Length: 222
Image (cartoon, rainbow, N blue to C red; front, side):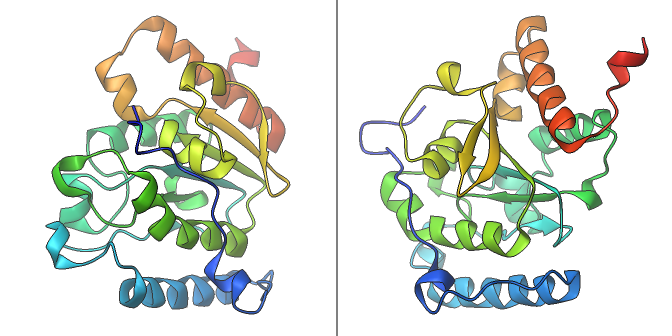
C-alpha cells in the first residue's frame, strides 16, 4: 500500500511535451520509437543511477503493436538480474494468467511505472512516479494498446490520477486518454493472498478484458 508521501499523480509524456509526435502504425517504427525512448530514459531519468542500488534498467518487453498492455509498479530482484519485467514468482503467475486468456507473452506488452528496482523493493513514491512515470506514458502512446490492465494500486493510481484503494478500483472499467483500462490485483498480492475469492476476482477482471478484446472465453464452453 502507498504511504501518505506516495500518492501518484497523472504526469505528462516527455515526447508529447517535446513536439507531440504521433507514432506510426508500423510495428517496426513503433519498436524503433521504443528503443529510442529507452536510450533517452537511461540517459535522463534521475531515478536510474547506481546510487539506488539496482543493477540494470528494466524498460519493458513484448509486441510493439500489442492490443493488450499490462502495467505493474517496479522491478524486483529477478527482474533486476535479468533486465526483463515480471520474471520472478509474480511473473510466472502473470504468465499463467496470460496463457489462460488464450494469449502468449509475446502477444502483449509488459512494463512498470518504474524502470529500475527501488531500494529495498519499496513501493514507488509519488516523487519516483513523477520522475519515471512519463516514460511509461510515452510507451503507452507509442504502442497504442486497445486495453490496459494495471496490476496493483501504484500503476492504477498513476494512470488514473487517483488514490483510491484497490478494492474500489478493481473490476470496474476506467479510461486513460481514451484507452479502456481495467485495474486488477498485482500477481504479488495474489501470491500473498492466494484465496479462491481473490483468484475469482482477478479471473472475472480478465474475462471482462477478453470480452472487450473479442477473445474467446474458455469458461463459456464448459
